Structure formats: structure tokens, C-alpha cells
Amino acid sequence: MYIDVILIENIIINYLILYTTAVVAKYKSTPLRFFLGSLAGALYIIPMFFYKNSFFRAVPLKLMLSALIVVIVFYPSRLKDFVRLLSFFYLSTMIFGGVGFSLYYLPGKNGYIYNGIFVFDNISVILIIVTASIGCYLIYYCIAYVKKIHKSIVEMDISIDKKTITTLALMDTGNTLYEPINHRPVIIIEFDVLERIMPDSVKEYLIGLDKNSIVDFDGIDNIEPQWIKRFRLLPFKDIGKENGMLLGIKPDSLKIYDEYETKEINDVILGVYFNKLSNTNEYFALLHTDLLTD
Image 1 (spheres, rainbow, N blue to C red):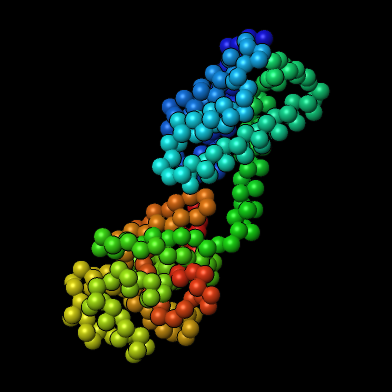
Image 2: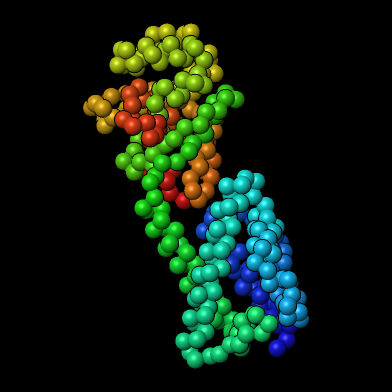
């Protein structure tokens, strides 16, 4: 048993686990950070080989090391991201370990326990690659299944003219409305939500549109020019009536937060809707199908 071989093997496996964590969590990092995190995990093995009753086997220390590795590799800025990354890291580790054990024992190979550490005999590069491939597939499958059954309501930030509001949006697969000129996807949003970041002149104009049930230009001269530039006309066929017209507004930026990632979107239009989208106020906007794809 050579400690340098074990160290190299652990660096490779740790790197694959961390890279898989980054892929499934959709969180970016650099090769150097992946290597440093892999090295930290591999170096932890060394004292466990030489000290039989070492405190390095304590569960709290192992948990602290896992947290440290996640911080080294990803440096998450929010507690929510840290918890999510740590969870994916544990999931990837368990799946890789389970697949690795299975592939190792099926051909009849053996391993042994040394100072509380399970050691494989003559592990091959092909076994590592196959383990990584199967592990990635299983993790992707599990996440896809959870996404499918998860209730699809997400948090969304909308920024216009240096003002930001937060609301809830439904990942609605039925919304396929586009702006006709530039083919930008349209998010349908309730007026009661959007009015919180509108100047009074825009609010009054839109309230007039709601009463008239048509889009016209009476009173538009009272609106600030920078807001008029945001307006878009959106023909539609299936939001409460046939062959209607919505007024669209171009935001400065928009962020969508779901359980797995944060998407920042700039090229989108908000379609102002004057009725309720949810009778129970579970959500106040409908996302476009284009915004749901990776």
C-alpha cells in the first residue's frame, strides 16, 4: 500500500465528485478551486492511516471538512446556496460510493479496511470513469424526477428604473406568448404587483386601459419618455378573451430563483394583466416556456 497512490486516487475521485456537484447544482467554479478542494479532501486521509485512534474520525470534524471543501470550491454568497451545494456534494459522494462498491465487487475483486478506511486493491482508471458516468446519470435522473413532481412556483425579482420588486411566478408550460417584433418571450404579470414600481403617470394610464379594455394612446403624453420606450404591444388569443391586446413593459433585468439555480434574464417583456392569475394568490405571474429550459 503506497500513500502517494492512495492520495492521487482520492484527488481524482474527489475532483469527479466535486465536478458532478457543480454540474447538477449548476454552480460555476474554476479548475484550480476544484483541485484545491480535492486536495483538501485527499490530505484528510493521511493522518487517518497513521493514527489509529485519531480524532480525525470524529463526525463533527468530517462535517466541518465537507463544509470547508464546499466553501473552497464554490465560495457560495448565500446560505441557501451553501446548503444546496453541500446537499448535492453529499448526494454525489453517496452515489459515487455506492456505484463504485457495486462495480468493484461484481467482478469478484476484494478490498480491506485499514484504520477504519476501506481500501480498494488495484482500482483501475476505467472503473473510475465508468463509476463517474453512472453516478452522473443517476444524479441527473433523480434531480429531473424531483423537478417533475415539485410544485412549480418560483420567486422572481423584477428591476425597473433602479427599483426592484419580488413576486411569485408559476412555471406555466402553457404560456408561449412572444413580442411580435423582436420575438422576446413574455411573462404575464398582474398589474397590482407591477404598479409598486411604476410612477403615478404610468399607473393612471394603465388604469385607463383597464377601464376601456383596449390599448389606446390617450394620456400617453403625460408619461415620462424613458417609460414610453419600455412599452410594447402584445397581441394574444387566450388570456380571458379572443384576439386581444396586452400592453408590454421592458424591464431592466429579471432574476428567477428556483430550488436549483438562479437565472438572470435581460431580454424579456412583462405583459400587464389586470385580473387575478390565481384565485388563491399562490402566484402572480406566468413564466414563458423558453425561460424553463436550460
